[in-house]
Length: 441
Ligand SMILES: C[S@@+](CC[C@H](N)C(=O)[O-])C[C@H]1O[C@@H](n2cnc3c(N)ncnc32)[C@H](O)[C@@H]1O
Image (cartoon, rainbow, N blue to C red; front, side, top):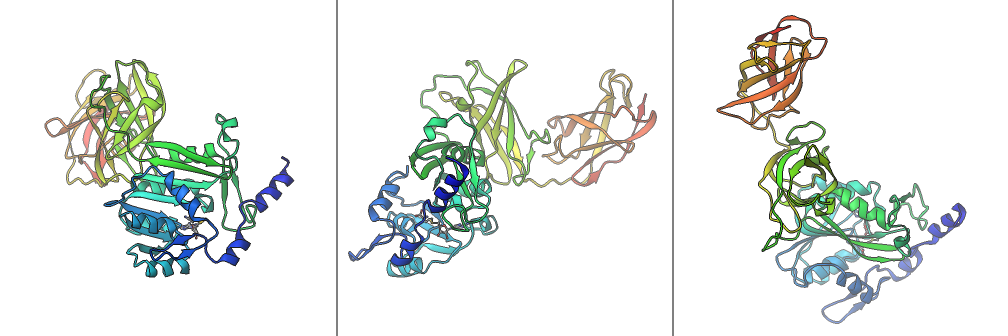
């Protein structure tokens, strides 16, 4: 299809504006007294859409968030099945309000944009519906990240796709997304993107879900179930758990993560099983699963990269790794958005790393020194510690665990460091230690 033909197709695709104006309702409803409201979408199709969702029939005890609820069929259906429902729509809908009254609904209706949700404390939801909304978003991946962070079990994403009829023909292609700057998709200004099926799946994975499964693909729509957790550990494991050696922020090399800007976590592990594929690595960070994006041998052990799950609790979170048929490894831990505080930082000893000579560093030979420091915050790490030799910053190569209140820090002096006696200082959490004199040779 050439560009003009594609433009003409998109312009008319999925356009139901006239029918909607005539009918007045998008969703259809069957009210408890038997009254039927016949909207643009048939009841049969609504029920068929619902039947594809991998959720229990009885939703008692579940919190459900319905983003872009419109007339509210999915919200009221979830409530009828026992859920406590929050419905969100960026346009307040008179039809929804009418039915809310008529049904005596207790659903919490919020006139909000999805992108406002990080700043509105609605709590967490077991299940989130994102039905017919993704293609309306200016920032689709960020939108998915927000929904991932608000959910504890499952997000169902149903959206317009450009290749629903033939996506299997190009499953291995690089995912693609059309961008609609104005009215390219069915003449409406509020349609922003048209991804391929593969692109929806890839964006859902990149948003930070543990598992992403395509449930259905219709010619114009894909339905994707995004799970936050792994299946339970096997009762009778056939594999030994791997040994998780380290879990590190690849940007800072430390254990602290900033949930607003960090998206990856690097792990090193050992296993006596054959080299696992990335699909066979099941990482838990706090209460959520994290999917691997890469695994590779690394000097006799393995290195794997995972997407950091959004919505982790502030503070320490355990990180544990398992294989499909093993239990979880022992935990390492990482700190999420954790503040640091220190009162007094003291350098309790310094040595040249090569010669183990006290209060000395030989810049021409290796430039490495080790020092032992007291009073550091428990989440001090390679990323948030500063070591100053005179006014030059040293590169920190190691920050050990506390032993009897002292932590070993190894660092390398810059090559151009002036020789002679220089003050060494350690800085963390806005606190600077008293200087210790170090002979630079
Ligand atoms: C195509 S309808 C989908 C209705 C229903 N969820 C369904 O699938 O049958 C899209 C709905 O999402 C709402 N919407 C679009 N962008 C939104 C956003 N950024 N935040 C919240 N709601 C949004 C629209 O107002 C509209 O009610």
